[in-house]
Image 1 (spheres, rainbow, N blue to C red):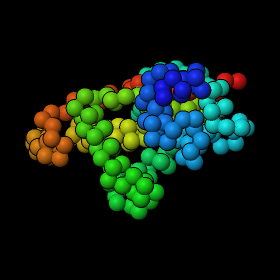
Image 2 (cartoon, helix red, strand yellow; image 1 turned 120 degrees about the vertical axis):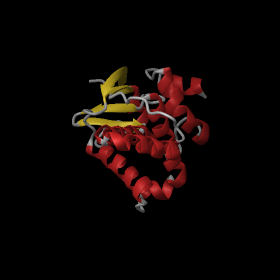
Image 3 (tube, one colour; image 1 turned 180 degrees about the vertical axis):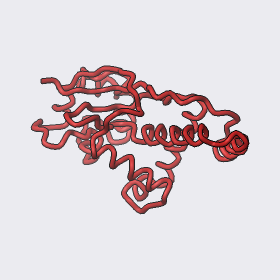
Image 4 (spheres, one colour; image 1 turned 90 degrees about the vertical axis):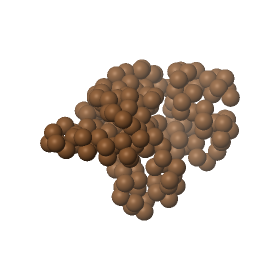
Length: 196
């Protein structure tokens, strides 16, 4: 299946195919004719390409290190992150809670535990550089987990010294970790840019 994807999208880095497209292709088949593929490919609104694969064939890729505390997300990506947060932590009845439910929350929590222990993401998210920021194409759970982990680190930093031990006990009870690693603001990402 990997070879079929690579022949359709020869410009794609192997890691992007393996981490993003291959799991969907194994589930939905390739070529990407299933009705879910346009959502997976997240072709930009107003794109004039006939098919999503036409758009993605016209992109170039770089693996970059970006500062997650300063990254400018598109409004639609920011909304996705906020909707996930509300579904998983506030039990809001929205599309993420209805479609991903406990499975989505478990993905988010697994990445957050990894970040608390390791300080970096398990694999790079996939972004599309657009005129008004970056769209998250693959990695919404990773972005939400990074933001949540950054909040935990900020709370720990401002906690009075006499409360830090109980703060760590609480983390240990919730996440099963014995210590917390410093979180790096800079994380690896794959960035796609539309060719002119």
